[in-house]
Length: 145
Image 1 (cartoon, rainbow, N blue to C red):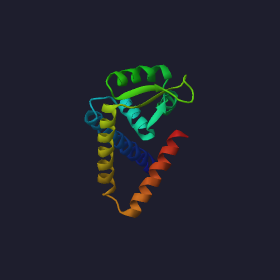
Image 2 (cartoon, one colour; image 1 turned 135 degrees about the vertical axis):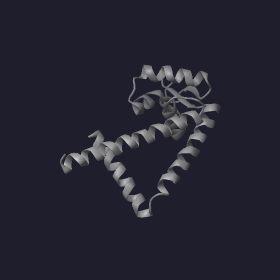
Image 3 (tube, rainbow, N blue to C red; image 1 turned 90 degrees about the vertical axis):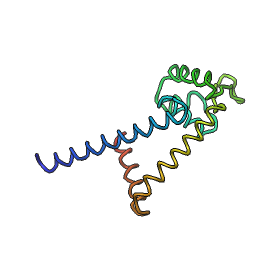
Image 4 (cartoon, helix red, strand yellow; image 1 turned 30 degrees about the vertical axis):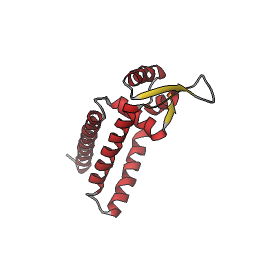
């Protein structure tokens, strides 16, 4: 095996490990936030970060068809995670905001995210943290281009 092949294998192994760690953290967040799934958690996170959102904005963020998002939102509304309303500017536009359960879940999510972030960053010096963040951004950009 060449040195280049070895480096490729190391990279793949590191990425698989990272993906597994992210998946485990995501599953834990879903459990903490009320036994919801990852797509539902992503919706709650997006809506919470934006206070309210148009259904189309969420669909675009998730790269999902609006019909799929509507069925997920219907479930989250029924479970009191979201509330649905029409936009003041255009009554045809449907928006959602966090409901009572959604607000509780979002707060739990933020608490967990902050704790996980502190835990990870504590393993690095300030300079290493900056380098890590830059490399993660560069990696993400390279993967979508």
